[in-house]
Image 1: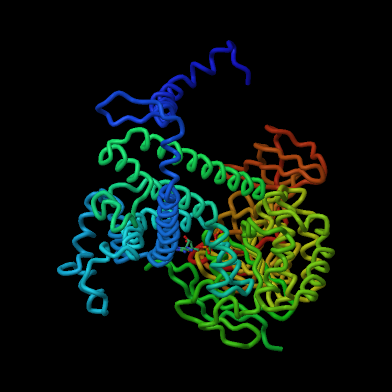
Image 2: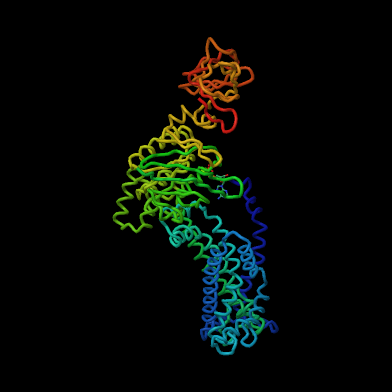
Amino acid sequence: MTPRARWHPWAMLAPTLALLVTFFVLPIGVAAYQSFFSWDLLTPPRFVGAANYRALAAHGHLFHIALHTAVYSGLVVTGTMSAGLALALLVDRPGRVFALARTSIFSAYVVSWVAVALLWMWMLDGNGGIVGGALRALGAPPTSLLGDPRWALPALAAVGVWKLTGYAMVVFLAGLRSLPRALLEAAALDGAGPWARFRHVTMPHLGPTAAFVATTTLVTSFQAFDVVRIMTQGGPARATELFVYAIYEQIFLNLSVGKASALAVVFFLLLLALAGLQLRVWRARAGEAR
Amino acid sequence: MAAEVELDGVTKRFAPGQAALDGVTLQVERGELVVVVGPSGCGKSTALRVVAGLEEPDSGAVAIAGRAMRGVPPQDRDVAMVFQGYALYPQMTARQIIEFPLKMRGVPRGERERAVEEAAATLRLERLLDRRPGELSGGERQRVAMGRAIVRKPRVFLFDEPLSNLDASLRSDIRLELGELVRRLGATALYVTHDHVEAMTLADRIAVMRAGRLLQLGTPREIYERPATSFVGAFLGSPRMNLIAARVTGDAIVAGPFRLPRPVGKLPERLDVGVRPEDVHLGGSGAPGYVVAVEPLGAETHVVVRVGDRDVRARARGFDAHRRGDEVKVAIDASRALLFDAEGAGERVS
Ligand SMILES: Nc1ncnc2c1ncn2[C@@H]1O[C@H](COP(=O)(O)OP(=O)(O)OP(=O)(O)O)[C@@H](O)[C@H]1O
Ligand SMILES: [Mg+2]
């Protein structure tokens, strides 16, 4: 199909382009520009070249933020996917009990991050919390998990998994429901037991679903902010300083717009690289499927 | 010799009330191909699934090779099934699909490869082995599904309308190949179809079902010439058998405009006379009527004639000279007419 006038396609794209430019290209551009200035929101900005970047890279600060974010995301994505798939397989049965189970598990996803964070802070509390109390009964020290630099990040990740699992389960359920029953029956007649049927029929069928869940939970977990802000404020000992929280910290706590902008630019480049990688994987898969 | 596949009073209900299978008893001998026919929803697929172990009967028993099958899962019955939609694993190549049953049974690799090559050669699939189902035509997929079934040389084959997705010419080609193949392998087979040509040509015996019940089991010739009920008579044969309401008066049977001699023996009051279209003659003598439809097929022509207030189907050779609206005289071959009870199940009475 060829357009009648050259500007026609642009007219079609204009609304989306306008939104993209206003809320995406422009802010990133502004951030990139400001990352070369030192500005505390009160005195006028001062050009400092790459000093902001250098300061972030010093003492491995940037590396630690990236590492924490990667560990957090890795834990959330793997945890959410395994728990979501396991639950989907478990509750994909007829009957009211299972319908109730499906609804209950999904309901966690509907609750806001702030509420989830507050709820879990209370549950993990070393003194009065259910989970904290249980852990102490098992011999853990009476401090909250969130106060322990080794356990704070995994604990935050567990909260993320708890919230996102319902979502993953629903998507996996949709994937399971679209699996033709005849395929499983054919595999049974071919001599495949339950595990072999899962391995050779169900899993390959769920491939695209899993890729979708992985992509969306990765994006969500990369943007984690509320849980950190409410539950740990980046502590203890900066063990839970994730990217978005670090940006917030630089602006609102350190009043350093330049450093925050530099962080945002690095974060953007990381996401870009990740998106590029994902695109490549998807293209390879699509080529394979053809 | 014991039956290879045996259904004994098998009943299966999915919901209270109507049974999908209602006391079906059927024995398939070793090496025999039994074709199951019947209208949609009569329980044909359910019958196959019960044999395969995909459904457990509510009551009654299934035995394969003399062994009771209650509680035996599908993977432990030596049964292969070709599904209506083929059910090929989309992410595997044809080679992997055909190999899969052997792999699942722990056959060593070398042996597997040999068996796949052999099956592929039988089905002329060699050049397609590295394609996935999405890259195959309907007929090719059908052959891959066959390959998966034959590669492990099962005791029993189950076919659920395997040709229904194919176009007419491909269907008749594959029908011939398939019949030959199953016979060559000497396997026992149950074959479900809607198509009466498939039933007549492939079957050693035909099982006719209706509403979960087995109405008749017999050779194609028995079923065609001596149908147990008027339903069976009308179900097999194309064009359909004429059923003409009749009553017995004195020593004759009066079926509308036609008169037939009364056979000896007791007859019910009201009858249906069954006359195959080839036993209806259009010509110089008989009841007057006029032609309402003509379907020339080349080798023969199907003609529908209105006699009084009923339509009579007739079959004529070649391109018959009749045209719509022509006046004709209709006669039936009384010696070949079948008499059915008009009441109850419509059983044949002579
Ligand atoms: N899983 C099921 N749940 C409920 N009812 C079923 C199920 N499978 C089959 N039935 C019912 O059982 C009856 C027999 O079904 P079956 O599939 O055996 O028919 P069929 O003879 O194979 O029909 P068709 O020629 O249309 O394939 C039908 O009334 C159908 O609705
Ligand atoms: Mg069916």
